[in-house]
Amino acid sequence: MAKDFKTLVRIRKWTLDEKQRELGEMMRVLEHLIEQRQQLELALKSEQKVAAENPQTAGFAYGNFASAIIVEREALDQQIKAQEARIDAFRDEVAQAFKDMKTAEISERNRVAALRAEEDRKEQESLDEIGARAATRKDGLI
Image (tube, rainbow, N blue to C red):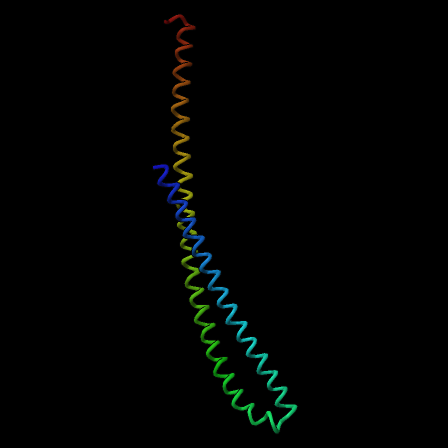
């Protein structure tokens, strides 16, 4: 039974580690999406500057470019919101895995403490018996 608890604790720790790794990967995806959106904004500002400097040549193409950027930005915003929702939901799973691991650790600690208390009780009974025999011998009863 002792081995079962240790195995359970190890499995729960491994599960938590895996979920934390997964959460980290989800966070990296979110960071990448946010970075893409920032790059899109920089490209839009750059194109606006070029269009303002050369209104005859760049002004013609800027309208189509701006429309495409707006569509792409909206798509990225939706992806960012969806990824944030996935992360929020997954954080609950990570919290549950942490709770499960802690429960297993506490159970193992309690089991070890109970075994130690039982061993201490048996040792004390043995010492009490030895003490009682010694006292009986001293009194001359044996």
